[in-house]
Image 1 (cartoon, rainbow, N blue to C red):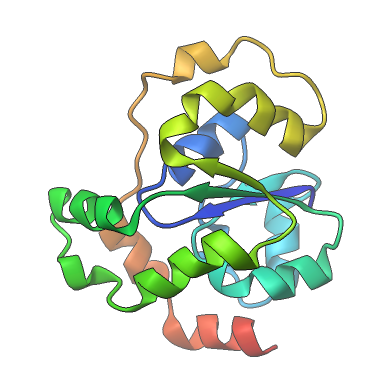
Image 2 (cartoon, one colour):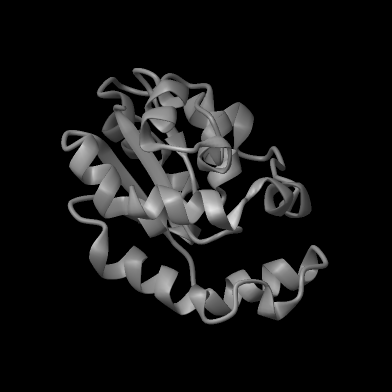
Length: 166
């Protein structure tokens, strides 16, 4: 796996997956990290669940380039409420995930949510190792989101636990 983009939910990871032409939230389909490698292939992926597994992912793919999108947890909660999910959707996990964004996932390219559009060429270069073509302008104003209820239906706690322990 070449790169992994992660961050709190509602931090434009679905949009970045379209921009970077890679899978979004593949860990919801994985039973093992080998499955993640098969899905990501020689490219990468964007996955919020990866915040919980970043050490294991780093150990398995030590040369993978990480991008961490930082977004204020209060903004994340407001965004979740705006799409109909309760403020308790992530509960106390939101703080732990935010701490992982700020301190744990290292080394990484850390990008503030509000700076994403301005830093697209840098993100592309970091992930792919080549200069970005002008395609980003076409995507900047597209609204790309995922169905969080469908995502939750795929997220099997037992499978996630086995991913974290295996």
